[in-house]
Image (cartoon, rainbow, N blue to C red; front, side, top):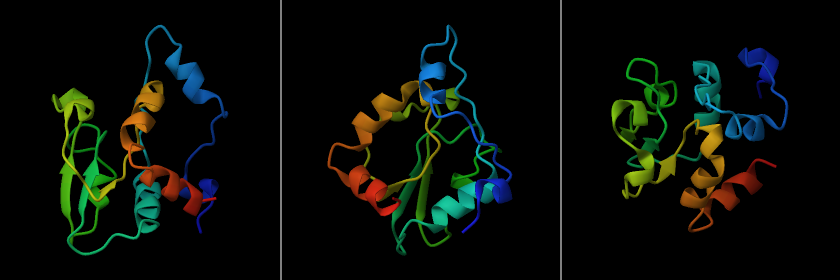
Length: 126
């Protein structure tokens, strides 16, 4: 397993979500290094034919999760800066693997946890 230092990711203080949420102007653009995106995707038990969505993908040309989804899957992406707002969409996906905006983290968790799948995933990573 890669450590955060090995992935090139800097650690951030634990209350970063609160700090971002209460800024006058939230800056939710924290790009995931492709090596970390690949590692996280590799931890998900994806099956051939699964549908995957990067709900907060980033702009075209810089989508580290979407760009690294396995080829044997059906892939979708959304990005509000590309006029595709994940909060307004109602499609079903087998997996949503993404880097959500921290200023909207409660809204994100309320949206994806409607059937408790998120809780199962979080318990697996403890």
